[in-house]
Image (cartoon, rainbow, N blue to C red; front, side):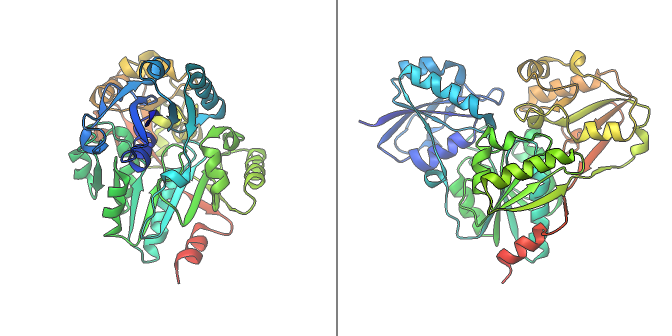
Length: 438
């Protein structure tokens, strides 16, 4: 009898685990996916075109809130937990729910889920969302290009639309972002790579993605999402830690997995964190993985016209996932507002509408900052309305993209940019040269 399986996910790791391990495996029957974290991704089916010959009708995707009933009605034998950036306590609460309903609870590791590339792979992952993984990835890509390598960034999945159309996505310029109808969250990850001349791949089927990317580059750069571990076997594992959240490196899943398998740690944001917190994170990382090299880095802020911030009442917009399941109450925009003399950081919650108001209700740790949520057209319109009806003099946007490309902001705006700068020795360039330059 095939083992009846439910996969808990968020339209990313869950689909990958299915494709790599379960899709053509007659020892298992995947009877459902459940979905959470991301708005409006349940109620779909994992399509038959991607599900393989064992699933001619595809696989239904239900809200995770129905999990207990699904275990019973679908007679599930096991439940596979397959999403990221949640506390260890949260994972065990889910395990208890599953066990009480009568099924086994399973976590899948690297052996059963990672693919082997014919090209070298450098992975950049993190201990939490919002640690500074994106600017670290950009820094690594620039170094590799300067060393003479052609690089493609393969981004952890964010397939929130038509899964068949999104099976393999290649982004070489901004027109590809429009062609694939990218959300704000996708643009935040892809646009900075495109600005640096780096091709980006993403999608649903990561073996097909890998095989296509291998044909045009020398080195694969795995650009991780949340705090998940890589889909590919890596030749160098770089993991970013955040001293603004000391202790999180040992309390979140699967961030601790990244810590224990890292070759290199980048402790980011040491310029804005307390020295005691930096030391605490350094000691914690060393205790878990004493063989890994530790680099300290800063994320200095760049604002085109910082003098325009002084004395203004401002609305601060930050990267959405950093504030929501990343649990940060502020980010680079808040730091810039304080540093450059804003008179007041105005709380956007009284102006929030629709799905933006619902986001504040769901993620109560989000402070008086606006998360740049844009999972689809409706939420983008809610974000636009929230911004435009806010009673402020100026908008400070710390998302990696120009929001005016996707919504119409009818207020003066200053953008905040940030890049990684290593402090001291060794540098990422030293490590990459030693590993890949013969």
